[in-house]
Length: 245
Image (tube, helix red, strand yellow):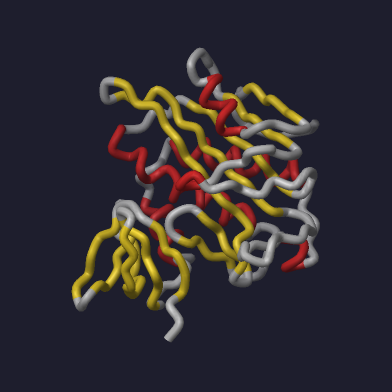
C-alpha cells in the first residue's frame, strides 16, 4: 500500500492479526529500526485496563508504532497525551466538528468515542528500551453494541478519509512530537480540547470511585480535579462518565 512517511521505518501490513500492540512487543526484543504494524482487523484488539477495542475488518485504522525514542524516562507518562494531540490535530485537517480528548487516551466527536490509544513501554536500568504506541480510529460506517458509546467518523460527519493518507500523517506527527515532547504546544492543545472540562464526573482512581469536577490538566498532563472542595492531581485513573445531576 502507498504511504507517505517521512522517516525510514519498516512497515508490516496484515489483513488480520491478534493485536498490533502484541506483535510490536514481541518484535521489540530484537528490532533495530522503527516499525509500523497496521492491520485491516484485530481479533484481540486491546485498550487500557485490559479492555477490548472493537476492530471490525476494513472499518478503521488499527496500528501500532514500535520505536526507541530519545526521551527521558520521566517523560514516558506524557506520551499517550502527546499522541492524542497528534491524532486530534491531524483529524482537524479533515473534520470541522469539535473534537475532544477524554483524559487520558480517548478522542471524542459529537460525544462519541472515535479513537483509542494504548501506549506500552519497556524500561531497563532507567533507559527506555522501546515504546509501543497503539491507536485505533473508527473511520467508516459500523454498528456498535448499545452499551458501547462509540461511533465512526463517517457516521458522524459523512466524511470519507483515505486510511493510508491519514495514517501517514499521524505517524509523521508522532515521530516529530517524540523529539519535542516537552514543547508547550502539546499541553496547551490538550487543555483546549479537554473533554468534560468544568463538568462533574465519576472517576476511578486506584480501584476506588469518586465524584469530582474536572478543572484542567497541569504541565505534566496530570488531571486536576476538584474533590471535596480541594484540587487534587490525578496521575493515574480514568474518567468513567459524566455525572448526572
